[in-house]
Structures are given as C-alpha cells and as structure tokens.
Length: 91
Image 1 (cartoon, rainbow, N blue to C red):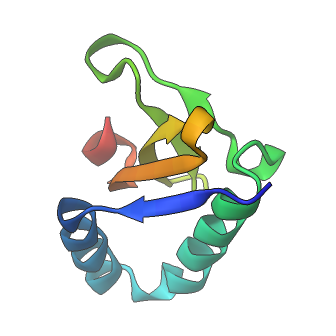
Image 2: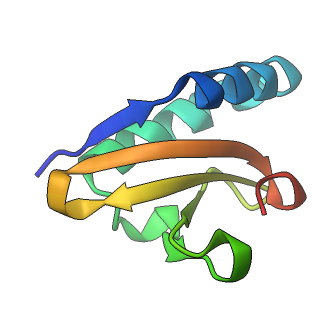
C-alpha cells in the first residue's frame, strides 16, 4: 500500500533551506521520500517513535547524520512531514 506524503508550507521552507545547505544530499533525500511513500516500515529508513516533548512524532533517517521527523497517520494512509535536518536540529 502506498502512503500519501503531506508537505506543509512550514516543512517546505525547512526542506528548501536544508537542501540549499546540502545540495550533495538531494538524491539521498529524494530516495528517502520515495521509500517513505512506498513503505514507511522499510528497515533502511530506521523508523522510530520519539518520546518526551516530541511524543507522537516519528523519525526516519536520510543517512547516519540527517533525519526527517514526521507525523505518521497510518489509518488515513498519510505521512505529514514535520522537519528535516541533523540530529540536533530536528530533536
């Protein structure tokens, strides 16, 4: 089952800023989004729930240094993207 990625205006601004800083990671970023849309539970994404002040938010890995945080609404088949960046920026 394919999921629907929801790109909010705030996320688009954050992603555009991140991509300007990291143009070399554009292909990895796009591949992560494609895989997330096709199968958010794919092992290479390392999907995990966050806790504390980010409870209710999940994280997937672009690579070892960078993450995408998201709200995962499986019942609606929607994945709402929240933030992209390194560990300190998104957590």
